[in-house]
Amino acid sequence: MSGSWAICWTSWKTTASISDFVQSEEERLLSRLSDLRYAARRYQTRFTFFLNERERALLEGAMQGTDREIFRFWGGYPSAERTILGAFPPERAAQEEEFPIAAVGFSYRKQDELTHRDFLGALLAQGRKRETLGDILIRPGMATVLVHRAHLQELLTVEKVGRVGVRGEMLSFPLTDLPQAKTEPVEGVIASLRLDCVTALAAGVSREKAAGLIKSGLVSVNHLPQTSVSHLLTAGDILTVRGSGKFRLTGEPRPTKKGRLFLTMEHFI
Image (cartoon, rainbow, N blue to C red; front, side):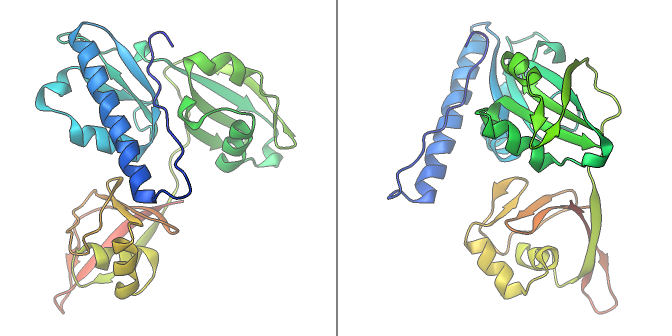
């Protein structure tokens, strides 16, 4: 596709392990990063499709010092979770409008109460690939769907989500009146900021069970897997626990009189 680079995934055979697939997936991402770097240094502009937070974190960790001059992530609005990586010629400022991102607003009856899962499930069931879709933002009677520009027209043809009739129209940037992420507080007293302690609080399990989740690769810090139970967290870190959700440490913990720590987190719901 002209002006874009697709990140393609290869399904693994049932005999292959999950770790082998993850390694292959990461190798493909790093190979794409190398391709983008090469194109930018030849004064060409290139883009990926949408990346999830883990993919973005992996690429950011692999970037070299000089890469900051040619790479930029953008998802259509400042706090987007799913973003596209753009590679631009050196010494040329990247412009948001250059990214191949469009937005479609779907209106429907407020009483139908459609969810993110409803929209994502319906769009994928119609044959769309997840990497062509960015964030899906829901508020009563309206959903905003970010989409790769090459797939805009087909998204505008969607007339139903499940059994609910919807009407789509292209939106202009910058996007306004977007819903804020919903969170609920999680707080408690822990022994330290070790990953097993914080995971136990977040997931509502024992420290021993939390350690098992970590060692099994079911816990991520800042969107990358972390298997060390003694890894220390800091304010602002994002903790993801498979089966329990995503959490953000909102501030420095307060010491208690007994030498423990009172910690507050946000749970994204």
